[in-house]
Image 1 (cartoon, rainbow, N blue to C red):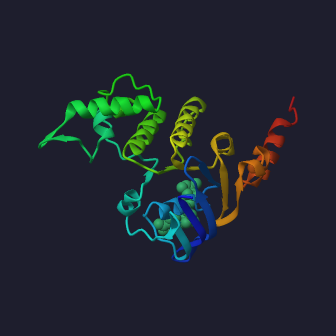
Image 2 (tube, rainbow, N blue to C red):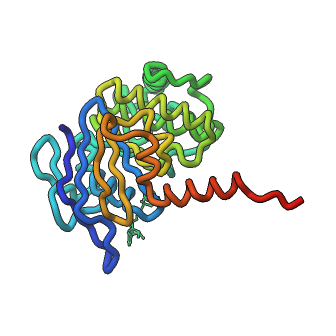
Image 3 (cartoon, rainbow, N blue to C red):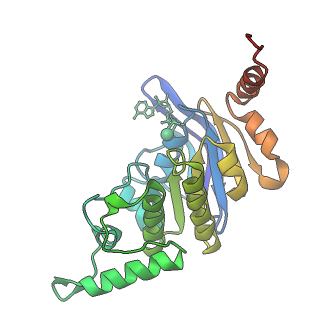
Length: 255
Ligand SMILES: Nc1ncnc2c1ncn2[C@@H]1O[C@H](COP(=O)(O)OP(=O)(O)OP(=O)(O)O)[C@@H](O)[C@H]1O
Ligand SMILES: [Mg+2]
């Protein structure tokens, strides 16, 4: 077990963002965090990532309690986070972005040849087919940009990869591409935390599922203990959605 939270709680002023939430992240497994808007998903992963600190409960990394003072501290423990607004510079090339802030050097000079080669190799090792690492990141699709960010985190030695809604802005095909890279990162032994509000994205890649509803945990389930239908039903609004789709598909004929 790399990460474990036990009954973690967090308030912002009078807002109870999280209440007694327990979850775990294991090497070579994908933990999905599901919930509707405002459920507390981002708050939870920001605690893991060192952006926020919990008020109650405990947060353990490698079995020992921690409290990160900054994202740097989380990164030093191998916990890397890919946010939706990826910290990338659109006009810069793929390989420049890959090494942003950690450029390989040859003496004092930026080692361009190495950077281009390593970026190309790492992308290929993740099965990412970028035609040309010299092309500006701004010309990539949303799914490809997410994929570059995932490959970058893997290259820089992440043990835990946290992805905050990487598929929510994507079409079906691109979401599929990102899900494949999540599986690839898992197969390379990383513990992946995948935040989504889409049970159909979570179910195929997830090993365990944490469901949040207004800051409260509805439980952490192992895949063998829950079906896709049960997962969908447990999601906040799941029942309403079923009802809605029923209504919409049985709209009385107006003619
Ligand atoms: N920095 C903050 N200051 C005050 N309130 C906050 C802050 N961050 C989050 N909240 C509140 O905490 C609750 C949970 O928010 P959070 O962003 O964790 O939800 P979420 O599950 O990520 O939602 P979404 O699916 O919309 O991204 C919300 O009521 C939100 O308004
Ligand atoms: Mg969020």
